[in-house]
Amino acid sequence: MACVDVENFNSLTMRGRTARDNRDYHNAAELLEDALRLWRGDALLDLRRVDALAVWADRLDEDRRTVTEDLFDVRLALGQHHEVVSALTQWASTHPLRERPHQQLMLALHRSGRTHEASMAYQRLHRTLTDQMGAEPAPGTRKLHQRILADDPEIGESLSYMSGVV
Image (cartoon, rainbow, N blue to C red; front, side, top):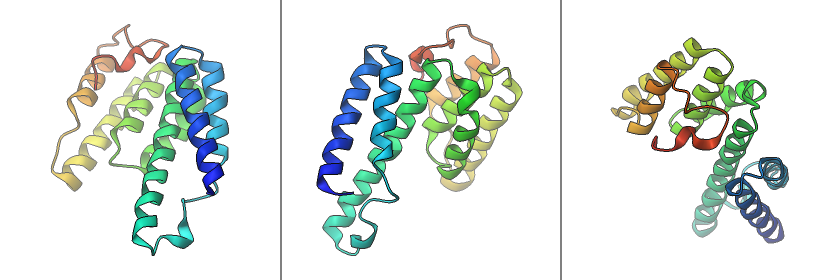
């Protein structure tokens, strides 16, 4: 990813997040999708042998992961829970220790009328974290699971599913 691409990625990301924060979800989705389309694999893959570049490349890759998860949030806010279940399932399995995509997957499944599967997704995350890290899911993830099991109406079609969760 060239410096110009990084600048474009950062600009589109910032504009997309501003649109999301202003609840302009359609524009946010478009801007975040445009930002992610700039990627062609891992950042600076051929140059990672240089320590300074490896650190920068790792940061860029983390930025891409975060923007991908921001886009999932926007799609959930747009009510596209059915459409993102498959992608979220894959994303969560590719990133088994990141709780945010697991939270998003749980919510998408629940909103799709698949609450049992949402609970199973939580159980997989719980098992992975305890087996690999010796830790429980974060309090926010546990709270979201409880809210899903209780069919809490507060986790409806907006980004408010995370308020008070994380």
